[in-house]
Length: 342
Image (cartoon, rainbow, N blue to C red):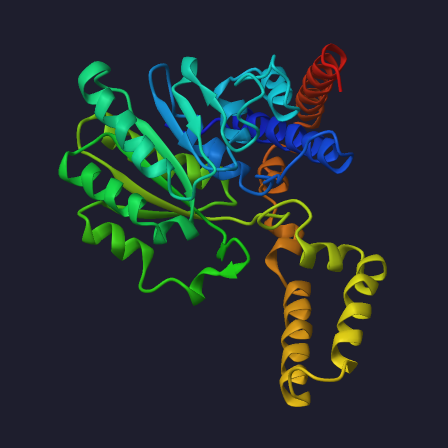
C-alpha cells in the first residue's frame, strides 16, 4: 500500500493556509493571548491523521489546530473559538490550547505532556467499547521529561493499549535546547518501558505515512503501543512573537529595543562586575548569532515544498488543487469573520 501524496499535500496545504490566516489575525490583535503555531510540522500530522478512521481518538498538545482541521473539524468553528466567540467549537471558553470535539474523539491541552494520559484513557475505552480503534497522542520532545507522560506510556505497555505516541522533536523545550535538559536517548526510554520505538523524517510526509501505517496497524491488531519519533522544525519558535526570530527577521526594527536598555544596564554604576557584564553580553550576542544559523530559518526544512515537488509533473492538476484549497480556506475565514462580532 502506497501513500496518496495528492491527498496528503492537500491536508498539509489546507493546514498551512489556515494557520497563516490565524497568525495574521493574531498579529492584528483580533485573537488574544499566547499563540502556538504548528507551521513546519504539517507532514508529521498529515502522515498520521491520514490513517485514522471513525472511532479513532486524538490527544493533542497546545498546537492542536492542524490535527483537528485535518481530522475534519469545521474550520469556522475553530476560528470562532480562537476569536473567543460563544459560537466557537468550545463556546469560546477553550481558546487555541484547549480545543475539544466530542464527535471526533479529539481533545487538546496546554498542559505539557497531558496528551499521554489522555490518549491512554482513549485507548483503554477503545479496548472495551470500540475494538479495532486506536488512540494517538501528539507531543513535543520537551514533554518526554514530564512524569505523567512516562506513566501513561508505562500503563499503555503494561495493559497492551492500542495507542501511538507521536513525539514531534524539534530540539527545543520552549526556549531551551532539549539536549541541555534531557538525559539519555528518547527511543531507549520507550524501549525501557517495553514499547517499540521507530523514527521517521518529520519533513517527509511519505516517510511519516509509512511509519504511522505500520504502527497503527500494529495497534489495531492488538499488538499494543508504539513510540514514533519525528524530527521537525517549528518556523515560529515556541510561540508567535518569539523574540530571537523577530530579531533575525527585522534586525533594524528589533535591535534598538534590546541594544538601548542593554547599553544602559552595561554602563550603570553598581551591580555586577565588568567581567560579569561582559560575560552576559557575550552570551546574548552568541544566542543571536546562533539564531541566524537556526534550522527554523532554512527553507529546505519546509515540508510543503518537499511534498509539492513530487507533484509538479502534473502542473494543471496541482494548480487546480491549490486553487481549490485556497478558495476553501478563504471562504471559510470570510464566513466566520462575517458572522461574528469582533
